[in-house]
Amino acid sequence: MDLKEVPTPVIGRGEVLIKVRMAGICGSDIHILHDEFLNYPPVIMGHEFAGQIVKIGKAVTGWEEGDRVVSEPHTGACGLCWLCRTGSPQICPKKRAIGSGTDGAFAEFIKVPAWLLHRIPEGVSFEEASLTEPTAICIHCVLERVGIVPGDFVAVLGPGPIGLLTAQLVREAGAGHVLVAGRSSDADLRLKVAKKLNIEYVVNVDKEDITSKIENLTHRRGADVVVEASGSPEAINQAFQIVRRGGKICALGMTKKEKVEVPWNIGIVKGIQVVLPFSSGYTSWERALALIALRKIDVRSLITHRFSLEDWSNVFSLVEKGQAIKALLVP
Image (cartoon, helix red, strand yellow):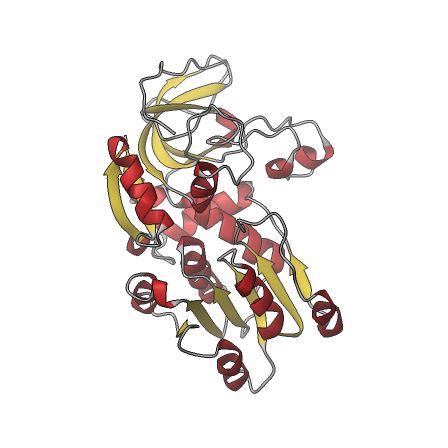
């Protein structure tokens, strides 16, 4: 990875040119840094961003220069295959997502197809809007794919940005009790923020037995829903232990390993559902922006660092060490 001067992107008929105002660093960007995530280098990284339209392609309608926008990352999706036609362009085999398959938002300007745009609501800052993408992922995976039943006991493993967004979302969706678990390395920052967000139960698994904790809180039944948001093989296995019979596990954390062993037979005997969703869709983006605008979820408390592009190396290091929650790059 390097920082260098590149030409301003040239837009096509159906594209817009956006001045990037804020761009967030995602856990997948750390994976790309270490070549642990599917990508098509050389490309400019960055897929979580908010900005302002500065130029419009000749075939684009409904948008004007100056509009404040965010964009889904599904560039390259063909629009013709069965997946695209049934509303799942995020898993189209021809998709080349911004920041990994084509040039992304860690730059002054980015071009995107206009069909991917969403308007930033009045009163929502560029900083807040830059967290739309991770919020949309949580909504798609946990609310649209898994579903939360009012009164559910939900355990979230991993207090990073995805875990803390998820904890807030399931609470808004009617979860009766929400638990967020992390390690001692999370205690000074991430678990403190979880408490600031008024998450009901915040557990340091290095100091407290999470299985016993959940058994006591649920009268030995287990969690109705476990959201695995860390990607840790240990936490993935823990999810099978703490979920109740007939419960659900939602996998949100990308693991660094190619394969992870899981207690498959326990999953079968308990009759659990394991949901492996990916990315996000149109409805989850609209819902994310609405929830942010309505202040139903607090994204600002997750923003711990703001850096210029020139400082990218320092901020990547902080994110990788768990010393930041959501760090933003300002072009």
